[in-house]
Length: 172
Image (cartoon, rainbow, N blue to C red; front, side, top):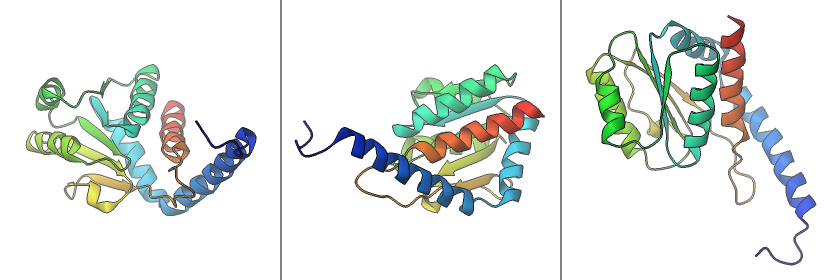
C-alpha cells in the first residue's frame, strides 16, 4: 500500500515528466547514423529473433510483434531457455538477433549472442550500459542509458525506440 500522503495524480504527473525527460535524454544519445544502421540491419535480415528478459521482455514482444505485423519474418524469444537457444542455433548468415537488456543480469542474453555469433548471425544489442554487450565489429550495440529520476527507471524510452523503428520500417 502506498503511503497515505501520496497523491496518485501527482505520481502519474511525476512519472510522465520523468518519462518525457528520459526520452529527450535517449534521443540525444543515439547518433542518427547508428539509428539508420539499426534500420538497415533489420530491413536486410532474412529472419529476425528478438529477445529480452524481465522488463525488456515487454519491449522485445512489442518490437517482435510489430515486425511480424508489418511483414518481417520474426520470432519473439520470451523464455530464453533451451528451446530459444535451439531456435538461434538454427539461424545463420543473413539472419538477425536483437537482444534488449534493461538492467537485468545479461547471462541468458549473452548465451544467445554467443550461439548467434557462432552461426554467423548478426546481432543488434540494445541496453542500458556498454557492459551489457558481447558484440563483434559487424554487430551493433545501442546504449539507451537514461537518468533515473526517483526510484523507478522509466520504461517509455525503450518502447519509443521500438515503435520508432517500426514506424520507419513500415514506411520503407
